[in-house]
Length: 144
Image (cartoon, rainbow, N blue to C red):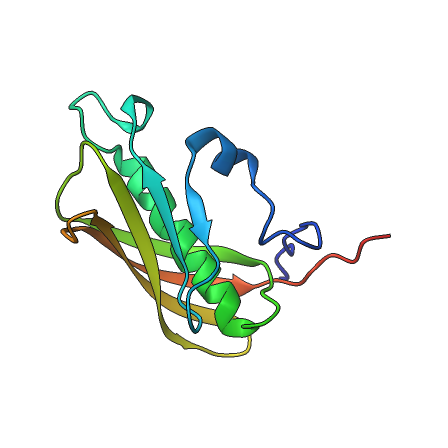
């Protein structure tokens, strides 16, 4: 059984997605090597009923950073789309204000699967969450 490949525009790594525009995170494309990061400046719209960063957003930030890292692992100079196969998140601490940053850490890859670990930290460097992800390589859609 073949899985559908991601259908994305040619310059997809620099375009802002709808989710990115709504949530407000930013992707750091200028890191050395394959590691990628994203950050979010927390506002009231990012907090849950307890006044802390919502766990779904924690997972999303780790998924973005790890997915961008997996993409760069396959083609550092010309990243390609990937899809998340699995993402396991461990919540360690919480954040209420300031900036949080998720970083993807390459673990290993083959021809079509990449393994990436991730960390989410606050401005002071406190570890908020970790992740272990598996990502499947996609292919770029050719524009007509």
